[in-house]
Image 1 (cartoon, rainbow, N blue to C red):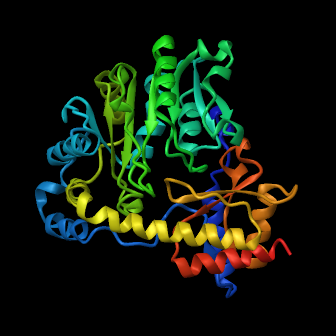
Image 2 (image 1 turned 90 degrees about the vertical axis):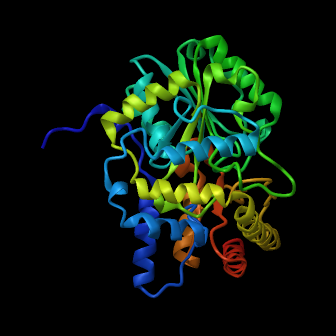
Amino acid sequence: MTRHSARFEALPEFPLAEMKAARRKLEAEGVDVIDLGAGDARLDPPPAVVERLREVAGDNAHSRYPFQMGLPAFREEAARWMQVRFGVSVDPWTEVLPLIGSKNGLAHIPFAYMNPGDAAVIPDPGYLAYLGGVTLAGGEPHLVPLRPENDFLIPLDEVPESVAKRTKLLYLNYPNNPTAAIAPDDYYEHALQFCVERRAVLLQDNAYSEIAFDGYRPRSILEFDGAREVAVEFHSLSKTYNMTGWRLGWVAGNRDVIAALSKVKSFMDTGQYLGIQAAGVAALESWQEWVPGNVATFRGVRDAGVRGLREAGFDATEPKATMYLWVPVPGSETSHGFASRALQQEGVIVMPGAALGAGGEGFFRVALTVSEERMLEATERLGRLLD
């Protein structure tokens, strides 16, 4: 067989594949597994979404190639939503691009900008699509550990100048996966200035903008002065509307970046099925009426998880956003070691922090994807690991 490329060999293992295989094996052995690993809530999408797909599934016009234009109504509804939600006006034809899930865009955009020797600043731990896209495009990932002393923000002032001057892309993700951290306004302003000075593109992954609690309202990077010059923002229907398998999202912002990503994608895919995009319109139309109830469900699981973990002896903090808890591993055990014991001894799947990057060592991630009752049962089981 032909040898793999050096870029392929540089890729880490993708953790979720291992977790799914481990779950299947244990369940086949009769183990009652509680899966808190993947961010894939066992909740239904809005009824209007399912009904819209039923309506259009038999329409021959929706079975044609969508290409990068996609469904005009989806572009228009995404632009309308950005205006209603953030007060941001974007042109649906030049400043919006439909995506086969936001991952589709986040991983492909480096192909438009990376030359050998170019750098991308990437949070560590972080969504592995950032690292994967940059690596496969031939760029140099500069991984910056997210630590509690920095409020899990990338300390941009500490990026070495030898890297900063070669930076073409800066990946931000706030509210953050996996740490659940949020970013203050002055941090966004600083990040934009960092990119302006280096003529870099700021990529804001805003997949968790609508899963926020206790009055907190995440902002769009496009609300800030100067953002249109250097930034684009990625949105996803996966988490907000429980549509992870539907694979639909969009990117909005700087029109030159949008055009570049569209060109790259035209060689990589032919767009998402138009029926799914029609269902996406129904999802966005249901935002004001339906999303608050879904967020309330996540809030209840969050509260149960934090309470249960604290009672079990863990140092759990209450996040203001996302569908995750980021919990320190007690003692000196590694995150992989703790997660392995949780699975083998108690049948609970948690994400070891180091599986999302070396900077995540010392933590494990709990996804708020089960009922409150199952979450409390899971935390009780995890507490037995501390006895």
